Length: 243
Ligand SMILES: Nc1ccn([C@@H]2O[C@H](COP(=O)(O)OP(=O)(O)OP(=O)(O)O)[C@@H](O)[C@H]2O)c(=O)n1
Ligand SMILES: C[C@](O)(CO)[C@H](O)COP(=O)(O)O
Image 1 (cartoon, protein in one colour):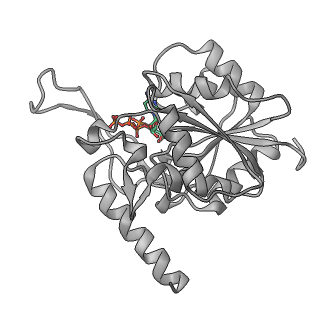
Image 2 (cartoon, helix red, strand yellow):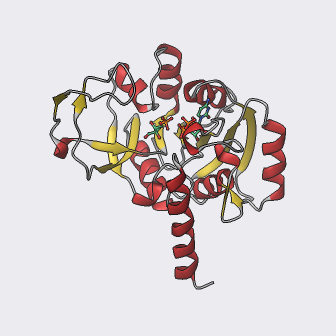
Image 3 (cartoon, rainbow, N blue to C red):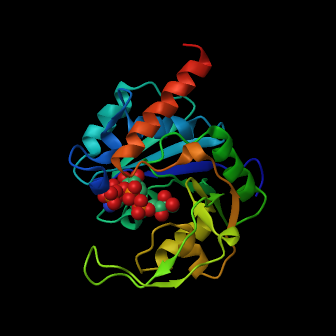
């Protein structure tokens, strides 16, 4: 795939954020006064390779998200489209894929819940797809040891350990995940079981998925402490930028 390839980003932002606790849908919650979704859109549109961003809004929130985009400064070289999402992340990504115009050949899928991904990580994923990988994931080595367990039948019960996978071979996977468009569309058409990321659907097709370096600031805002961390990262960036 050449450097002439056109790249679009699908941002699934339709989740409730149950693990974050009560409040507005997660993507619409503020980080230092700006909705998380706007941070995520700016992070992706910071890549000069990205010409289109498709935002997948909460099912009944597309109008609100369109207003949000109108009310915030976004790069003029990028086009924006908003569509309503579905009941699962997979359904939401599919809704975004369905509205991609002809001429797009690389698609990134990026969680709205990862608002602080640096542009170098985005560009690294795009570069690897351009170099020929059908699917690319940014990832980091793990710092904790991981145990495989027999899940408890009742919450809170002790769980027997079944195995300890070799940590050096494990990676914690982030987004944006990058794909040759035809591969991602085929994966979404063929795989019907519920999966937690898009790359695993490509794995199920038997196609190669490669890992490029992720970034610690590309973490997912999932639980309340992650909001504290995200605001601290923004404060550090502001201090480093000198304003
Ligand atoms: N039906 C859904 C569910 C999730 N997502 C999006 O998928 C991304 C990753 O999901 P996650 O962090 O799990 O978000 P939630 O599903 O909102 O979180 P929770 O499981 O705590 O409710 C988020 O940007 C979320 O908005 C989506 O677009 N549509
Ligand atoms: C796609 C993802 O962010 C990769 O780590 C993750 O799998 C999303 O999982 P979630 O349970 O929907 O947060």
